[in-house]
Image (cartoon, rainbow, N blue to C red; front, side, top):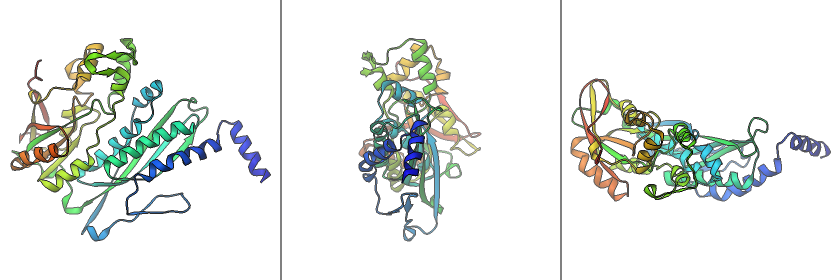
Amino acid sequence: MAADSKATGAYAAAGVDIAAGERAVDLMKSHVARTRRPEQVTDASGFAGLFRLDTAKYEDPVLATSTDGVGTKVLLAQKLDRHDTIGIDLVGMVVDDLVVSGAEPLFMTDYIACGAVVPERIAEIVGGIAEGCHQAGCSLIGGETAEHPGAMGPEEYDLAGAGTGVVEGDAILGPDRVREGDAVIAMASSGPHSNGYSLVRHIVDTADLDLTAHVPELGGELGEVLLTPTRIYAKDCVALTDAVEVHAYSHITGGGLAANLSRSLPDHVDADLDRSTWTPDPVFGFLAEKGSVSREDMEATFNMGVGMVAIVAAESAERALEVLAERGVPAWRLGTVRSGSGRAHLNGDHPGV
């Protein structure tokens, strides 16, 4: 026992607080419990998360996996001392990549690295991750919190996550299913999501913007608007795939709408997208104006109001819009697929431009 105490004391002197880590685990337990699915199996040791795959449900189950982080948006959360939504962003970045293949997200694990474990802050972060998993319908099956004194300041942290989903082998979505005449359906984003925040922060710094200032055209404080969590489409995409003939999805992340949608096209078709079909959220115009950012650079960096795209059979377009409306997802017909060379093209102007 004495040896253990001595080791703990030496570790604490080096900047690692084991007791704080244990308290953080206790605080996050109730958040994690919200995400439990019936397939989850208890591992008494706590070293691994166990999940029983319901093989009777599938003839040819294929597992899908994805991993991601939240980029430099985490620095805004730290600057504003607001930590309860950044975990939602993490889940959105992971699970909405998974559903592009047609997979249903099953479970996630998270990793939080920090300069010092502040139990209440860690619990807030994990609470956001749990909320994201709840929205996505997946379990938060495990995770790790690591204290890195010296490598990070006491108030600094970063987070990453990995998710696993499952899809029937003959139901995998992707470019090979897309054909001429398909309809392109846009699903609205909640803002920049978790992409382009290095540019966002550059604009805030160079324009000397006050993150706590109320901005009338944005309807709130600038910092709060910029921390708006990522919209999670996982359940909506699974429901849409069950309801209509979906050929492909595209999660609109870093690189913008055209570049990401091009990844979901075969090399013999193009997608023509009409800017006149939607008005980007005011935050994008605000950032473009304050940073003197061109439309080309904005569209190459941000989602510009489109967070997920579905490519569906032409005859399924109206029903697809009905399904999404019933689920409370703002959506519209964005464009059409035609013969081409595997690229998405943005045409026209947004209303009022």
